[in-house]
Amino acid sequence: MKIDILTLFPNMFLGFIGESIIKRAIDSNKVKINIHNIRDYSKDPHKKVDDYGFGGGRGMVLMPQPIFDAVNSLKTKDSKVILMTPQGIKYNQTKAYELSKEKHLIIICGHYEGFDERIRTLADIEISIGDYVLTGGEIPAMAISDSIIRLLDGVIEEESHIKDSFNDDLLDYPVYTHPVEYNGLKVPDVLLSGHHANINKWREEQRLKRTKERRPDLLEKR
Figure 1 (tube, rainbow, N blue to C red):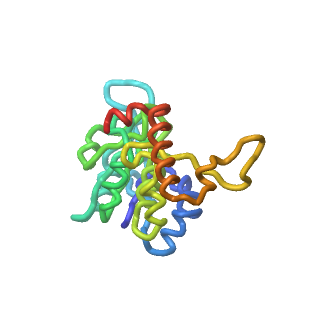
Figure 2 (cartoon, rainbow, N blue to C red):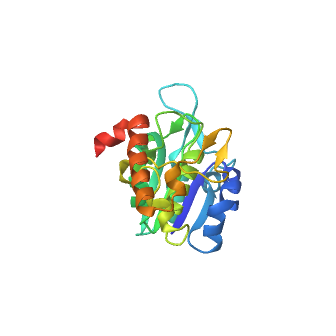
Figure 3 (tube, rainbow, N blue to C red):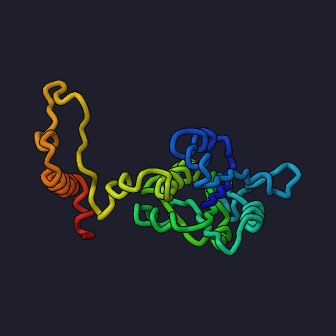
């Protein structure tokens, strides 16, 4: 997979692509991530990319020309263009699986007060990561990229994400490690029994219980 991210703040992504699972996925050629500075595509002599919106109002608005040129220079027949915006569809694990099947993603990070409405015409899909507003699309772009990359073949063990929260619309079961008892809190006996059928049954029961207690809305979908 190839991911091109358009941003005004490329340095925000240095840690994201340089650490942990994402770095290993890049190093092993499971994914290629390119970070593009939107200002590099501006035709303004001062690399201006924003302006005041027509009709008044507070804040600066991203202009269409740099973003149109950036997307058009990167787009191929295999590309899917994603616009990060609070007005987009709410992101979830189902969408992560869907996007992990794509060959090429172009992610546009908005910033400032918003973007010229005509930029929407570039997008195949608009995505929000939740009902709140951030200063820009960079953190959401990292979040969805991370969620997608970990699903690619060979990035992590398949069992690790098959049992993740939100698969089958259920949350994950509780997990424990050593010591067996800590601060008076003990590991459940079933996990120490070595009886795998009972362990699997307990885990499924816990998934249902935890989802009912914490996210009953997910059970309604089932």
